[in-house]
Length: 193
Ligand SMILES: *[C@@H]1O[C@H](CO)[C@@H](O)[C@H](O)[C@H]1NC(C)=O
Ligand SMILES: *[C@@H]1O[C@H](CO)[C@@H](O)[C@H](O)[C@H]1NC(C)=O
Image 1 (cartoon, protein in one colour):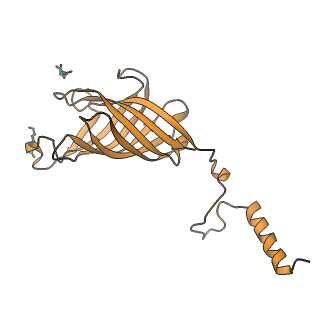
Image 2 (tube, helix red, strand yellow; image 1 turned 30 degrees about the horizontal axis):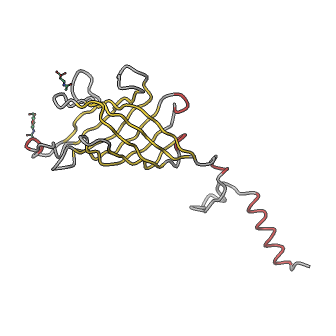
Image 3 (cartoon, helix red, strand yellow; image 1 turned 90 degrees about the vertical axis):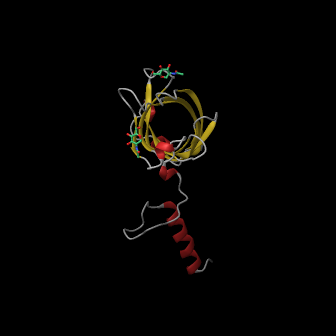
C-alpha cells in the first residue's frame, strides 16, 4: 500500500498539472509555466515579409523630421549627431502609391563619424489583412545606408508576431543625395509562433 504522504504528493502533483491557473493568487509575482497551449503558442514558424520603406525627408509631405542635432553637425560630412523621428509608409512595391501594408515609426540617429550610418530604433506597425490591428515588429540595428545589403535585428513583436526574433536584409532601391529621400527594400525574416 502507498504511504499516505506519498499518495498525497501524487494527488497534489496531479491537481497542479490538471488545474493550472494563469495566476494562482493575487500576490503571485512570477511562476514558471510549461503550458504553452494556454498562451496559444502553436509550433514555431518563419514568416518572410517583403516591403519598401519610403523615407521622405524633404518635399511637401516629409515623413522623417529632424528633432535635434549637435552644434558640430553642420561641419560633419556624415551629419553626425542628427536625431530623426520617422513615420515612414511601407508599401508592397517601390511605388509610393502601391498598396500600403504598414508604417515604420520610431527614431534614427546619424551615429557614425566615418560613414553615413543610422542607429535605428523603430516599430514596424502592420495594417494589412491578418496583420491589421495590433501586429508589430520591434527593430534595432546599425544601418550604413550606402552599403548593400545591410542588416537590422528583429528583437520582438506583438499580435501575430509575439515572441518574434529574426533579421531584416535591407537594400537601397533609390537614394537621392540632393533631396535626402530614399526608398529601401526590406526583406524581413521573423521566427514566431
Ligand atoms: C545648421 O545649418 C542649418 C541650415 O544651413 C541652419 O538652419 C542651422 O541653424 C545650423 N545649425 C547650427 C547648430 O549651426
Ligand atoms: C534627386 O532629386 C532632385 C529633385 O527632385 C532631382 O532633380 C534629381 O534628378 C534627383 N536625382 C536622382 C539621382 O534621382
